[in-house]
Amino acid sequence: MIPVLLAKLGIPVLGAILSDAIGKIEHPAAKSAAKALRDLDNALLNGQISNEQMAEANRHAEEMATLRMKENAEALAEINTSLRTEISSEDMYVRRMRPTFGYLMAATWAAQMFGVAYILVFRTEQASVVLNAVESLSMIWTVGLSVLGIYVYKRSEDKKVGL
Image 1 (cartoon, rainbow, N blue to C red):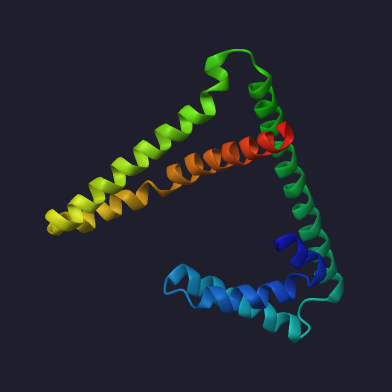
Image 2: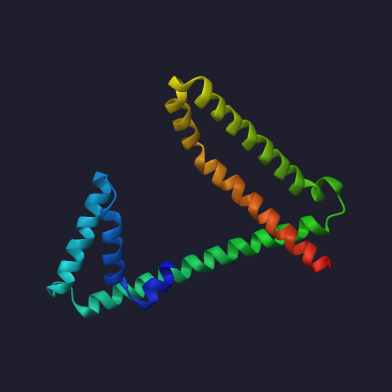
């Protein structure tokens, strides 16, 4: 979405949108970033930054967005290649890796949620510590659940092709 915004609207409009959005966050870094973006917008309006400089910044932003999209496409191509290799494998363990991973993720998620529920109900005084600990696991859960999502999506595709 950001590459589309950059290509269509450019940095000034994107800066104004981000300034408004970030300015609503109650954190010193967010407030500072919002102020810097407002200062940039004011400099543009007052002619302190030339149209040529802004055009060059837009061109550079578009180029960076294009590079990022290519990187993402290459990564997805590699993932798809490895999934196709897995599907065509005759090794039963390799073929069962996706369901095994799914069941392990489900069991781990359930164990964590039952543990959190137990703490919230029976050990309420420790709830804030446990919730902070769970929050610190959010990145690893994001990665694991993303992989599981790709597995499920690809398996659904495999079933459609099989029909």
